[in-house]
Image 1: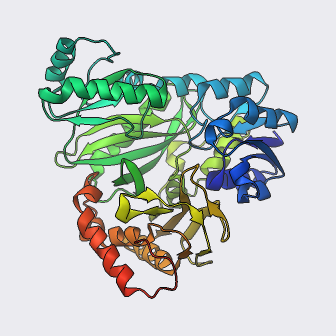
Image 2: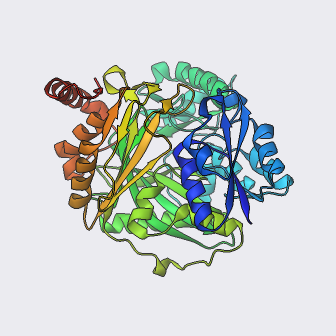
Length: 470
């Protein structure tokens, strides 16, 4: 494999290009009208225009993306995350055209993409799951839905079987609103995933979101690369991740890691994946949530604590060049934290804030600091895609040092011309609950006003040398 197609944009495209270059491989980038001249295009050996700015007409256009690879002799395709990364049509089409798919098999993507089917597979592999129901299609009788809910127990979640990310998910506290919530979720699921099936699942009131990075060799063997705590979220989207998960009992972690590895081993899974769990913060019971069959946004946290280059390993495995490592050879060193810096306005419900990035300056050459970005000063954060500016990853011998470094680097980073969440991230990092490692998935929602008050005070106290997040 000498040349690969990078079927993505932004910071993950840049990350893939760097990994391929380290392996002596050439890369083909694709871009839309909005990304003409983007950093990932300049880094690649070849850049191919694939369509207008809307993702549906460019980055989600299977034929246009693959045509770029075929035209320029791609021997492999790396989909990154988002867009077509978990699209079985794209994966199969790439393989049918003679390009290696740098990811798990289309069958694995399909199995884990159906969240209800994934629950059943997890159960067969001995992974604990929350009480749940069969899937319901539109037209199901209210009586059957109510009967299923009584077995699951209230409160419960109505979840789309064909998707994730919190899209369409609804919390139902009692039977009075259940049928309406099912119908509403089915409608949203059909629009978002072209699949109207939904299912019911027990709701954990005080939950932590903990995931385990796994890597399968495709032959029934797999390893884990430890866990990541992802409980700091807004609108069901992660904004801060770290490893190790603080205050997690060692015995619980050991059981969770063993359960996570059982799933890729049972599926003969190939490549990088993430097994996500809900942990009851009170009882420390954990339950399977879903498996993501791709590289994760937060993979840099795992790389910082293990020294394992996950993207390079993905490419090497697809090229038949990876030397498998046993679990005993994988160790953890210190701690790492990642903050996602977004062009968004926390004071307006985190509404995206596209515009010209007039100033973007972050400190260079600091110990234990890594900045992953796909933009530069003078670039435009467009309204067409995810408004991420950068991922800031800090590491150190312990959590306290990683946290100190994160506060330092965020405090020294300057962003101008657009609204952003830098000060909000700092407010979270300084909150006593985060410092103590006792946050749960409702932390941001519960502490929102206190965190926003800090933002207002900071904006009033800071000289107007740059655009503030308020």
